Length: 447
Image (cartoon, rainbow, N blue to C red; front, side):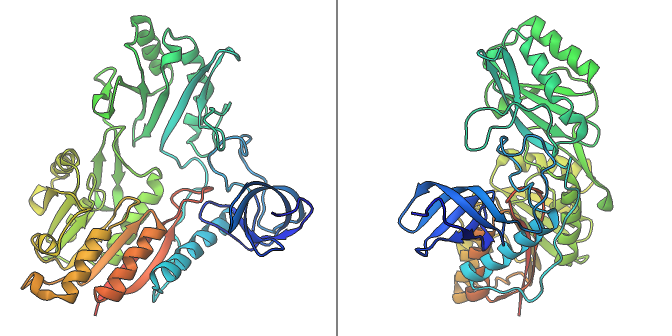
């Protein structure tokens, strides 16, 4: 085990934002709070045969990229654990993580490295799930995120990554809940910000009393927010009062407005999302008259902008409810004639089933963290045995948007080594500044 007086040289960061070093025995040590190039002493908290997990206790040589965290709750709150690392270095680290993952896991090296997509480092988080906890011993309500590696809610009165007007609401929300009859039965407030609306979804385990409903309405009148209530599962979410503007976000470059519900999946960072959509479409190179398939289409975040450029776009998603919402959004934007939407399980698909959706010149793939293994495998099988789907023509170009570099690397290995594609470009997307989360975009082209 690493001795408490041993000085370790930090070599790199892992995908969790921990420093990586080797002790005198050659064992890997993951160090919370340490940065590349630093020399540190540690306290080991967890020990395995091949690695140890530790926290930093002393710092002898400091990284030139170490900065003072902007948030006063850094180190206690479990979010944003890379605030002590210069944001430019964060982006470089994420780019390197993407490239290393592609090579070590998929044996794929992109022909061109794209410039990382980056944007505001603070006040960017337009979606969040705030925990609410009435602490009887303290005689107060806490509203915020969990403490680091704990189920306790951090005692916080601000948050630097939330927009300023929402950060300022945290102590006011705590005061509101503290005065409610059901204060110990309100576990969560979900935040969703649109172009005109700040929506708050209050999860309540018991029916709210009339005085509590009145308190919510008074709060909304004083602080321009829109209350939604969630008595049970996500399907029970409803507006407290049917009034005010709808919740939506916009993609001005394409003239698209996307209505959504506060519990729908939308990107946390709307500024970065707009840039990501723009770059994805430039890389896709969809032309008038071409057919495009958007796999894992969600609410149509990519489908509808593509429809402004291509001849036909098919959006495919695993949820009937999401497909219905996509159709509504297409109609809202006057794009029903150029789009169609299909619901099916995309984690189980055979080569014949894939071919059954017809040939398309281009694909946009935007899967969840699990990736698009079934799609990539079906493409590899079709490449190895075209007789599985006679007449099927695979897409010439695929743009793959990923939220997990490991599953992207796995799928890229299949596309490049078994499905006849080249990885012509890849780059990181800093969707979540000050976190270790790596989003990315990769482009595959068929020879």
